Image 1 (cartoon, one colour):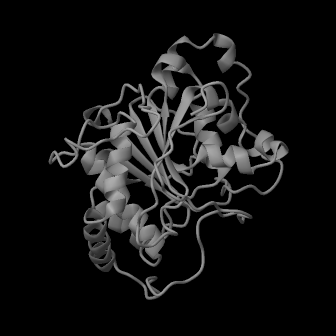
Image 2 (cartoon, rainbow, N blue to C red):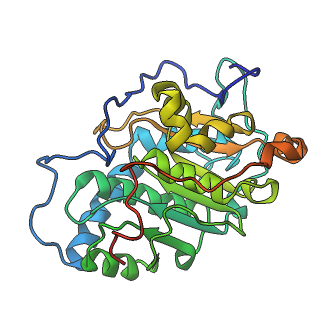
Length: 300
């Protein structure tokens, strides 16, 4: 683990991670699969299919790996049923997060860009995991917020039946946090992560968020500097104060959770870093069609 420059990346042992190259403007996986549903799903049908995914995830080694990653990141102490009480959670470097988080401290969960879960099996599994994490972290369903400009009315109704809230405004990721918040953003574009970091570019705000999404380390290594400067300036700038924990991609369907990491602020560094670090925080402006759907073109 390199402490001198770049992200502090805690790597899992002997786990191969899939990297995505040549992403289209919408980086979420596309195409059809036998697991996709092409018929129009009612909210009741969507809930039934979602329950199947939740059951499969609960019994999977992938969820085991997610919980181990949460323990390593300091988000939870051990599995609620003490499954991991005796588990070895450190890698060869012995690295753990020094974050302030605990399962009971999260007050909100915000999910951006999960996609059309009524028809896409990828979106359905991602949503199933999101809901499971909300329960794990004791977040009230009314404090779980979802937005995707692609959501159908039926999908919004489905989320309502789950007790969750559907945001009516396209925030473009520019949501300022006032409470300890988990952002769940699977396979989102660089600009969305970048906007979120910009919106919370202060010592007080940045300490209150954890981001689950595409690896920031992979974004910075695989993107030319000129593109980083336009679409991911704040992803690059946050490197000294963010520690990244890759989640081992052990799920049966390898295209659902690939390239996913937990990004946690390093509390000690955030609180003592000089004021100049937070200066020159201009709102991102994207000069060409980026991988984000702007509010002016998205439906409410």
